[in-house]
Length: 342
Ligand code: KG4
Ligand code: ZN
Image (cartoon, rainbow, N blue to C red; front, top):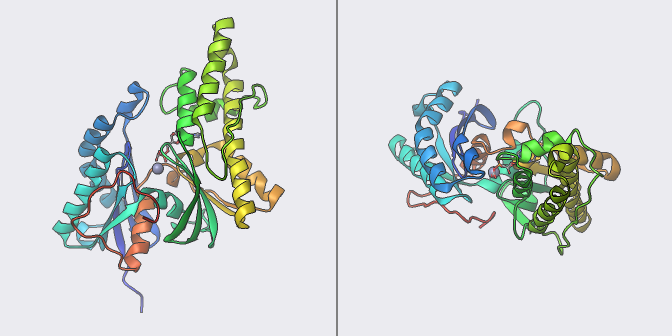
């Protein structure tokens, strides 16, 4: 006999994207994301404005996710939501909304760790995606995090290394800001980098022990370099934007790849899955594909839709937890700092 399908409504509001998704088992039925444009004029996410925008967006976004999935809320099996890590004011909106809706519908509530979701997004069932087998190494690269995680099972994860200061997405965004590019600058650096020569300018790579990362020194190095060059030629940035972006991107990718190589050597695990907004970067995608030929790695790169913040990745974790009846009590609160596995 066919088992009853499980419908999960998932809500993500950890930073500046309000998102809601509906999953039927491991398949996505809808994944609606409202990106907040308001932060562009401030050159970065303003937490108070993000929180207010989530409050405005959450009802229409959830409504749209349900109607696109063609699901009535009475059919839902459970509500999954991002408990953390993230901005407190942003997390509170999704958390409160999920709790209220779960009470109203009298269905289970399931908390999800945002970073775990970036990793488990690979398990959404879709034609163009293959799920990695365990164990694998996950490189989570976003605007808030940079981690190398050893994934032994869905909920057995160990952080092998992480950034000691800025996240890799911040390294992209802050470099872009130095070049006068609008926020978020990561995608623009990527765009210009594709037209430039990555060997034109050399930036010093940080020396950090083990599998940890550091990006703040690189940012300062770029700032001093640009200031020095602009003194000599005020049009330096405009005249060299492609080569500057290509050189910055090349350095960042080298830093990531060096650590990945070390992680593979330390663990003997050659399956690499990436997640987080920076996985959209064309350079890192290319470097990983090359590593398949050069080092015999098997790499897993999610669909673009599942790279940046989205609720479908929260939904897949919700489904996996639902199967284990791993539910969350109503007294749960948002958790701005929330380590994987804690
Ligand atoms: O995962 P995400 O959407 O949000 C966080 O959880 O932080 O990641 C956003 C980050 C931003 O820093 C953005 O500049 C960066 O991902 N990003 C990129 C690219 N697309 C997004 N960085 C480099 N190249 C890209 N193509
Ligand atoms: Zn994220």
